[in-house]
Amino acid sequence: MLITVKGLVLKERAYGENDKLLDILTDSMGLITVSAKGVKKANAKNSSVAQMFCYANYCISESKGRYILNSAEPIRIFYDIRLDVERFALASYFCELLLYTSTYEQSGEVLRLILNTLHFLEDKNKEPKLLKSIFELRLMSEIGLVPNLIGCCECLTYSAPQMQFDLKGGKIYCENCCGARDLRTFEVIDETLLHAIRYIALTDMERLFSFKLSQDYLEMLNVITERYIKLQLDKHFSTLVFYKTITNGKNYE
Ligand SMILES: [Zn+2]
Image (cartoon, rainbow, N blue to C red; front, side, top):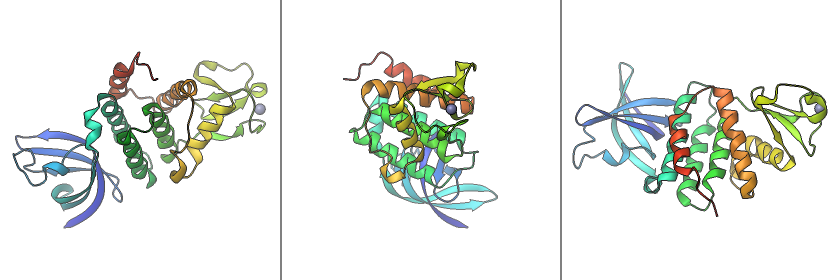
């Protein structure tokens, strides 16, 4: 049986001497693993579409629950991301997050989110840190781990100069209602940060990438979205460690 799906390769693994296994995030079948035979040979017909960050129309045959790559038409290969180590590391982290969260209930928007993020990452007009925060928080929203951002979870105060974001509970408190809680999994957020968090979690995908933050706020937002992922998923991501090793101490002018 032949199946045609649009999909993005999140991971490629060598398999045998000439083959690869591809983990592909598809538009209609979720995450699937596809065996790509012979693609490591010189001049193999499918070699360009059997690599990480390739988005293509894949024609796949299915037999006994295994998928085998038949042919593919590339739609977009995010090739330039591989040429810059910081962007490559960040994109690899996004892919690891997607592989890990593929067991969660995903909306169809997840593929769109990663394609848009990779587009802006390759384009180089947007700060990688901004893209990181957008991707982290929006992914959590799309898989059903969106924080409750309506207002203070107890008195519904919509906004205040200073509020507390409970990263583990996924809710916010005003200063009055927060009281004497264990604040180790909390982050203080002001109105600018609260607005940015609400925007990323809740706005339409069309407008998701069209906002800016100052460098100071970007740093704070990064701490918050990264901690939110860590506390919600309780998982160590080796690609994030690699990304941080590269960017550690780097100045963003
Ligand atoms: Zn309150």
